[in-house]
Image (tube, rainbow, N blue to C red):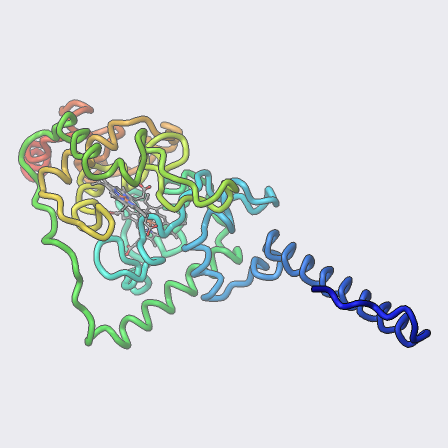
Length: 320
Ligand code: HEC
Ligand code: HEC
């Protein structure tokens, strides 16, 4: 029931009505302002080289520096994955592809670069390959923020790890000595992966606004890691899958993980320029046996580098 507005009472009522109307307008305008800020994310997204911004860059990469960023200068990644699509819990989940112990490992020798690489160069490796994007400037806010974050999680980890250094993962992959079986890999995919990653590996967007990226990331197609990425190597992918997938219930056998990794990597994905890939591993003998792209310094066919068996290739290099 609405109250009857008294018709009498003079200017006092008029003032009260005007005041409440003004309050209402201010309140609505205020709400609209706050919501529009949230929509464009202005206050949150002002880049600063802090640990917190670094954490967000790794967790919400697509939103903060993805291909749909409203400012073209801040579109650094070429796909809508987040770093955390592979580095689970923004790199804080201990175990395979954890970033908890990364900071102290760099600089270190990189066979791919043929020289020592520091942490910034390593991050750019994932920017150009896993994220199919471009390098960040070395002194950019984004780069400094991610390095600050990796330093901070590694310090926290060192300070507290003794009490919780238990990694809850199945035993690590023992590589089958045969070539991967793509038919079986497809069957594993259909049975165990498709429910989340989609009928055609396309994943599932978090919202109709593609800038928000995926809740379930794509495994092949145009919007995922390219053929130069670590995940494009069957052994690397099989190790990750055995340790982590299906998410929340990693229970595949070595054979299943190996076959499904090969199946995923037999599907089309973005390609890096072969001219760039040609410069990888200047000492070809250090090139991983499962590097899916040439050139190689051995007589084995391309398909064997992609899908195994890897034993003979390993033996070939050991003999040298
Ligand atoms: C598609 C999966 C994937 C995505 C997405 C991804 N990475 Fe990686 N990243 C990997 C793999 C695989 C490796 C390890 C490769 C190897 O075996 O050398 C790695 C290694 C790294 C390392 C070195 C870790 C260490 O301890 O040596 C850093 C640092 C890193 N990634 C940062 C990032 C950042 C930052 C992003 C986002 C901009 C990102 N990655 C996105 C797959 C991914
Ligand atoms: C319950 C849903 C679910 C199932 C089932 C599942 N995944 Fe995933 N997968 C995810 C999520 C979610 C991520 C991203 C991690 C995150 O956001 O925390 C992911 C990430 C990945 C990634 C790295 C990111 C990328 O886009 O390449 C690979 C590779 C992968 N999954 C492979 C598999 C394979 C192979 C299977 C089947 C054996 C599988 N997944 C089953 C949910 C699932």
